[in-house]
Length: 156
Image (cartoon, rainbow, N blue to C red; front, side, top):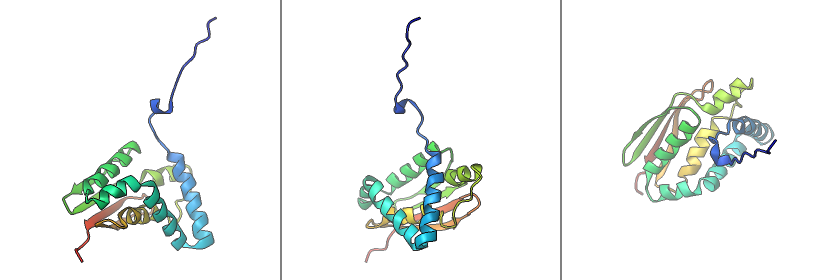
């Protein structure tokens, strides 16, 4: 019988990292319990600044549409439709549920009390040093549903 070889690459599969969220939740719980919520905020902000450096460069150049595109793409990959309102100076994002929170709950776990920082502090870290400021207007800890607002800062 001839040997059959199937060649596959990671790019052949849809990218999805749901279990990353469960691990992140445990890491956030550890940081909060050992060092406080401020440490969680610092960690998430530092991650946002480093990992999303290319996106931050576009924001520094005033490209708010790049952020809207990024948010739409990330949520689409994870199976959540978001509502986006974009103007030259303001981006409002309405998230009906957070795929990370949904997955954590499906695993029988509870999102940590500081899990909202993965939205709030990440957005603040993205906007740090850019013409934009981030606000988390609403967050439902049960579902992760949120309303996020990014707006051009007033000129000094």
